[in-house]
Picture 1 (cartoon, rainbow, N blue to C red):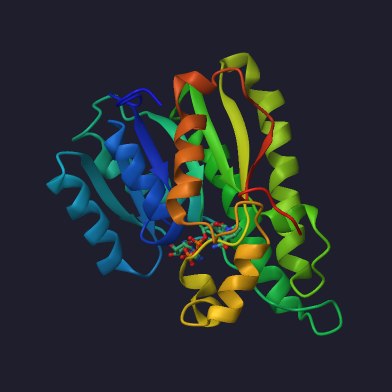
Picture 2 (cartoon, rainbow, N blue to C red):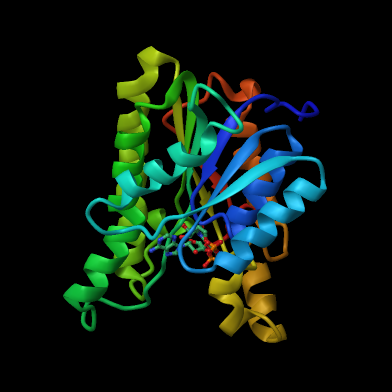
Length: 257
Ligand code: NAD
């Protein structure tokens, strides 16, 4: 990766306060981008990310954006518009990363309509309308990167609705690539396997047996770290990836599932 390949770019990362989103925000900033760190409720964590970036000489700002309901995408961009002027006077964005997501464990038999609606609202509805509303600000030649999951292409009935949301996200990505290609905008999904973040903490951390099992799911024999995903996202955001679009890029360490 060339040093500071995102100099002068502006990136929006949803769910940038922790886990994979935080690693993406920090990596983008090291590459020279100004990063808008969108968060839902974890304000302290989001401001810590922004502080750390600034201490390291980067530019970032936090914006509160609870996602999933009607109008949330418009509110997110209004919050972006209110702050971007300090960093980029024309108010545009170069990279949109739809990373915020939730998982709900349930097989079909026990799935409730509320669980279904909630997981689709955050994982599918929000990216759709964030991109639709963001297109007014996204520069030609820009990048859209959607954080999907290996679960989109595996039979995992215990998380049946979650897997379906990520399948929908991947199809959205494919269509974005086609619709926005004439503007030089690329759209790709990145599909992680098991990554050591808070969502997996309850069963993974401090449980050597579970960790060994999770590690065995990857050809490389270890559990993925947020930075493993962030580095792939940084490549897709860079000019080096200008000829990659409409793809789902595996971030599983070679899934053996
Ligand atoms: P995480 O729970 O650590 O972080 C999720 C982020 O999304 C947080 O910043 C949270 O504030 C934000 N978020 C959640 N609900 C939101 C809402 N309603 N509105 C706005 N923001 C909201 O999870 P993570 O592991 O870092 O996951 C990030 C992405 O990666 C998700 O889309 C997830 O589905 C995907 N993913 C994770 C794994 C894994 O093993 N961790 C595997 C495959 C895919």
